[in-house]
Image: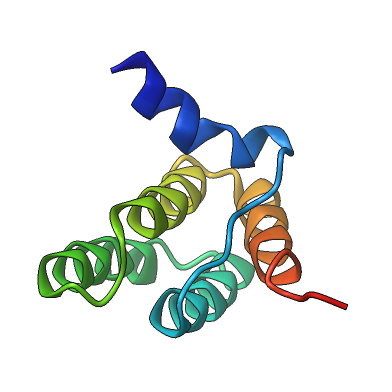
Amino acid sequence: MLGACLCCCLPLAGCGYEEVGPHAYRLTISLDQALELKRTDQLQTASKLLDEALAAGDITQREHDYLSAIVAQGLAGNWSEGRRECRKLLADQTAW
């Protein structure tokens, strides 16, 4: 249990994100927009979409955990922190 919590929280502590698939990447961009606009309703919809994407096999459990943690930040009113994590996740996908 602790391992799962640490795995989910480590990226938020600044350790970096592992590679995500194209579906998770697109969802991250959408989350960033919802956070920028401070749209709680869109974050609630995103949470449901994340669960559906996981159930359909479109995203992995790790990706679900990453994105759900970002959604939770927004729902808690931590808009800037959520956007920062979206940007970090997207930046960590770039290999120069």
